[in-house]
Amino acid sequence: MAMNEPHGVRVLRQCLDDFNSHDLQRASRLYRDDVTHSIPALQVAWHGREVRQQALGRIFLASSDIHMRLTSALCEGDRVVGEWIMTGTSERPFGDLPATGRRFQVRGATCATLSGGRVHHQADYWDLPTVLRQLGLLLPRSSR
Image (cartoon, rainbow, N blue to C red; front, side, top):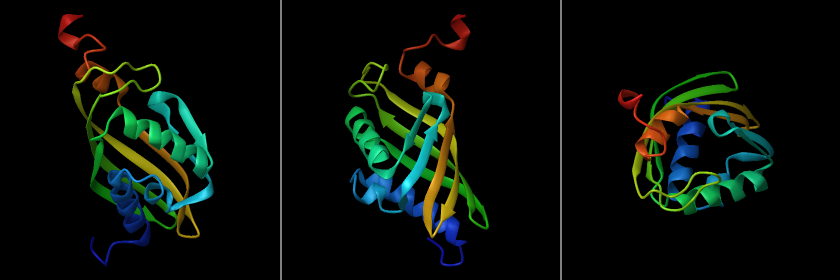
């Protein structure tokens, strides 16, 4: 982590490092109690740090090796945007998605707004059909 990075980029980088620890307390420490975290691909929005923390617990159970790597980030004022690569293995069901034992990798982006040095709003954008194809839950494009 470069010390000359804008504060928002450092916060986002630390949030991903905390996520990668799979420690629920650590993964929630840089989020406000009234955070709203949405993942449009899954049509979910978690309101409140406690609800978000419970959802992360389900994610970590479904994929014990899930990992996010920040590839670039920009910050202006209290807004930060970062691109990342998420990898993992589908080990247990997650919501409507059955476990397949297959690995996935998807590029995505996070848009966040900070307040008081903590995340107040976060939206994570990634391509669900890409993940479903990798998990064998959606036919490859070439077979359509």
